[in-house]
Image (cartoon, rainbow, N blue to C red; front, top):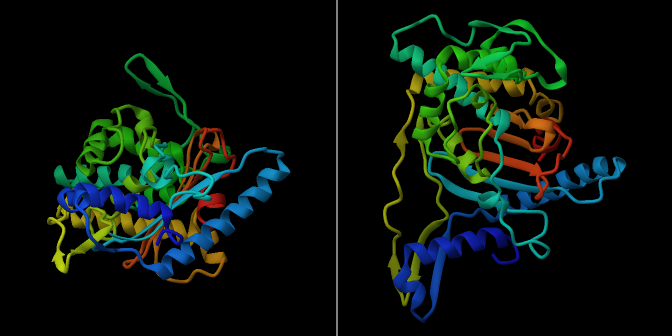
Length: 341
């Protein structure tokens, strides 16, 4: 595994030392059984290499002297098993593991949680007037919060005026999403993310709508398990069992799945995320020949610093991040740099 998945081996080693401290400190031979799927791992490595080569070509034309980095994490959403794990461009050149160590703004990959918080709040209040077909105004607006003002813009300065929530998520419209956040209450969105327990706790400000806080690709992937699991969060795992001196030792029971949202509200958002691929910012996946039933969300942060894509089928959930270690702008959207991988 060292050659095939060195970043994964580092994570397994750390997990092994924490899970089996007695065995890790003792001598003798230990066989460690992991969740990794070597076939998928090889495909993931190829995808990252090819994707970064395309990013390099764009950056070379712009005369950018440094190379972008990438992280890929693929999991089985029902079990939380990590199936493929790429922590960077080249392990020999940099052992920094971006899957678990790169704390970046999730940007637009957070938007589905804004809509989920809205549907959750409507359900809690017994309202039936908030659905994917609800219309919101996607027009330039200045939001006032306390004594602060915030005037976000849409990507490419494109505004749709009146737009359904489904279309707003599919096209990743910032203004429409910020209006939904204002309607539901910023505190309810922050509370939902705290229940999920990923990344730095966001502050209940208007900018929460656009994912202006930090999380790692590992945390984003774990948070996204709630969608294929219809509201249940599935903790991720890398270890299955170990054999030490002929004795099989199962790991302590993994943290069990826990419900963080209703199944019906989560289903609505998941179905809206199918529109991302079918007609929205992820439609280039269809144009490239991807035909499976799937859902996902692109993510692009302020000044095009980070490019994300999270996509899933019932069997596989993959999160990709592309950016620079020094946090300079990569200058590409999530659909341009993350989605192809």
